[in-house]
Image (cartoon, rainbow, N blue to C red; front, side, top):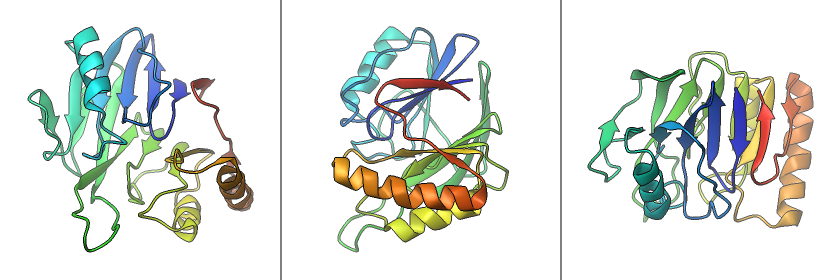
Length: 207
C-alpha cells in the first residue's frame, strides 16, 4: 500500500494502482489528482477536511468514485455511513468508528465525525481521538487543533500503539510548532515501540 500525505489532513492510499482519497480540504493546497480514484472519504463536514472545489475536481475526473461520509456532509452523491458500518470498494475494506467530532467550545456546534480503518491496517481518525476496536499498524495522528491539547494526542498514540505514526492536522502550526510536537510525539512513539515520521508535503511511502 502506497501512502501519500498532502497538506493538513489529506491522505491518499493506493493499492494495485487504485486510489482512495481521505479529507481533501481547503488547506490542502498541494493536492494532485491520483490516476484512478475509486473512493473518497470525508470524515466530517468542516472545510479543512472537505473542500467543495477539490471534491468537485475529484468527482468530475472520477465520476464512478464512491463518496462516503457522515450523513451531515452535504453532497447529492454521498453514501452516508455511521460508526460500526463497513464497506468494500475496489481493493479497500473500510470500517468506521467514533461518530462525534471532538469538542471545541460550547459556542461551536459539533458535526458528526468518523474515523476510518482501511484494510485493517491504516487508521485516519478525522477530528477525534476515537480508538478503533482493532489493532492499527499505520496511524494518521492529529497533532495541532483548536479541539485538542497535546496531552490528548500523546495519550491517543499510547492507546493505539501503531507501528508507524505520522502527524496530520498541522497546517495551522509554523515550523517551530511542528518541531515541538515532533519532539513530544517522537518521545512517546519511542516509549510504545512506534516509528514516528513526519512526511513532507506530497511525500509518498510504502506502508
